[in-house]
Image (cartoon, rainbow, N blue to C red; front, top):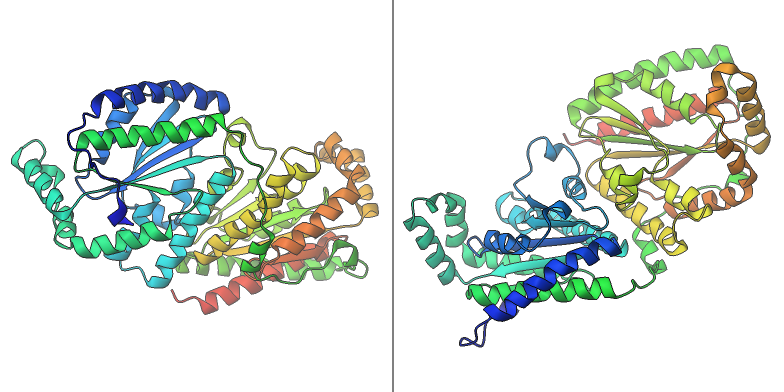
Length: 496
């Protein structure tokens, strides 16, 4: 792709006047971005000394600083490397109506990592897929992502490096790493070209500009920005479409429909329960220490009917854990800031670092249950969420995380019994709300939605475990047994 970089073919033309008009247009477009609540990401990649910093400075002069942020992407810190690769980039996505400008980006984790960090071909391919998925998910949610790669020849780069080194105030900008990359220009060229080819998608195409002529480069950048943003703010977004043919990417694990789950005879006597609980908590405590040493991140996710016993199961699991190594995250309706981002944003922000455990009391599955049934999200976006959720969980498992998903199943009579118990017990009354009763009235609709959720998202990588929870004691021990078995197997098979 690099051979097709946009270059100045009209050497005598003065591009400055045309650029000035475009600069004014960009400034005016920022308010339209605010009005349309359009989130915009502008990223610049390219060779050393290709002019990224100067172009960003030129661009932001025309913008209201209250409504954009500039990020300079450095190599991941030791702390950042303890989280999934894309987490730090999810954290930087702008709110709806805002802009993020990136001086380098997630693409540093591809070509540069392949050349300098020695990642394998398999890991490189996985990261390419992660990046393409990330950009598609944002694009599907209405984000405008404009990607520039600034290209210069080896000869032009040498010329610019020499000029920088001649001046004592700028010579520091040419590092030993820059010299190494320049010396191996041909190898980096090949790797950059491969990266650009594999991540040049219809929803996020690359704009490759030969930056030898700075005046022409500025015109091209502003022209592309104005054109892309104008089109985005003046065009109604096309309805999102879920592609059924992508489902085969995620091998599924069989899961029962809720109506087929046998709840009777799933009972544990108190005397046996307390023996099992003590034994399991002791074992789980040992396993927590082992996953910390092996740096295995663990995600436990609990969904289920209101009053199905999610909190009780979470409490018995967490009691066995070192409080310094886990976090329980209660998930309620999204707040104003969360609503101004892609719905997965708040969950990426709460992922555990390596060796730690995060327990989600409700989760991202609200997108295909309450948001779907209550009409909070369009049917098209809800339909697309199955694929997005599978991709999200596949990403986590691919990074070495354990993902365990529990659906706590009770019948309608048991729920009513527990609701009434809460009403009649002063210290439990806070647990019962008008919303619980409203949700109960929609039991059939929720059961249909849950069955579809289980069918579409019980993957081999992250299967659902439906827990018979009419008897709380039985349910708690079954949850703990599954957690213990999975962590034991993971530790046994870990290469760390």
